[in-house]
Length: 115
Image (tube, rainbow, N blue to C red; front, side, top):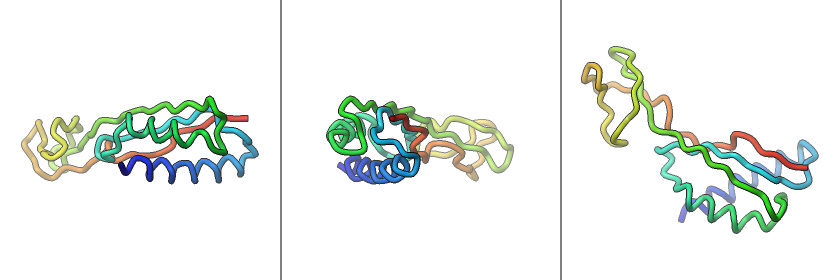
């Protein structure tokens, strides 16, 4: 389960940022998780439930996850669209195959709260 390793990395970032901002206990964390990150929200929640037992978290710390769909923008006609199949990037407007991914790769901390 790579989500545990991902969450451990996120905890390292949180610990450094909390220390930088004089936060002793993190009480809430919001993550943004794009479909193309292939991180499973339920597995991230499980990993968080294990890791929140350790500093810098309070024992009641919460994890909120915002999932982001994959979106593309056609290089030919500039149409922006939701990618229905993560492996077929075809513009529904013009059928173009040159598509830039504009959303869906995210795996980031949006914010955290604490004392």
